[in-house]
Every structure is written in structure tokens, then in C-alpha cells.
Length: 118
View: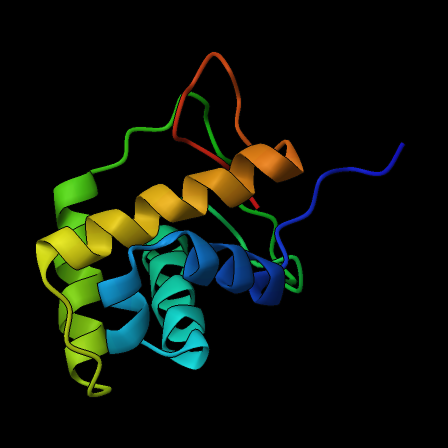
């Protein structure tokens, strides 16, 4: 059986279909991809996740402590630099929609809800 894998394009498609209609009108599929990439960038900087292309293995202790407020702030600010303007409600809707994808792919650990590793 193949290990579950996070595929950005698939995640963005699920997120886009799962967010509220008003947010779908505000954001494009490509903007969702950019937002998810920015989220992963934050997780890499916090040593919570590592790119599969990474030459260096990053040891990760589970359970992971994630400062969700700091992550949301980071995503909002980094995306604003790319002309993607998000409210806290927008980012929460996107992250909640991403959970649907993570559940579909079997990437959520039941013992550590909401925490996943790539």
C-alpha cells in the first residue's frame, strides 16, 4: 500500500471546492495554491514539515506544537505581499477546507488532530 502523499494541486482543488462561494469568487485556484504553498513555507521554517525534495532530513518530534495564530498571521502577511488579501476568517475557512483533503488522503493522525507532516 502506498504512503499517503500531499499533492498541492489536488489539495488546492479540494480546498477551492470546499470554501464558501463568496470566497471562491474572491480567490482563484492559483491563489489557493499560493496560500497553501505559503502555509507549507511556514511549516518548513518551524521545522514541522520538510519538502520531499529536501537533501537534509529534518527530525520531527510528534506531537508537534503549532502556533496557529502565528501561522495565520504569517500566511496573511506573506500573501498580501503577493497581492492576495485575506482576512482571518478567510484563512480559517481555507485551513478548515484543507482538513477535508488531509482526511481524504489519510494524512491526519487520530492521536494528534489537525497536525500532519508531509
